[in-house]
Image (tube, rainbow, N blue to C red; front, side, top):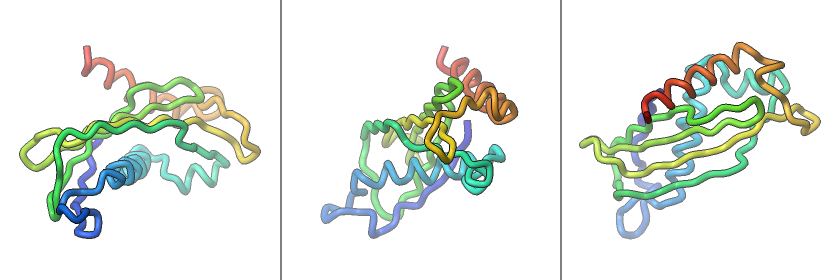
Length: 142
């Protein structure tokens, strides 16, 4: 599991002073980019290797509101990895440790021509990292 911290910005709030729901998905992307950098596979490396990793699905469950200028800790974990598919789980917590949002995003891996890449075959080191993290995540939920 990897942790990313985000400070709620004033512009991310609505007229009621709560974080607008669309921002949580943006925060998932921020956390994912930071996570990928942390494991040595930042988006520049993806591009240099000719890999594209589009989002194929996203889900978000809101549990509690957040407001400016709260710090939200986003726990990022690999929920599932299978050669061409990656599912990342996000658990967002406020400073008190309360879960404010739970989400997930699914991604595939494509080359520049839009054809699926089997990460385990073409990038075994990257696949090993994702597999290990997926296994660790699975053990945490048993």
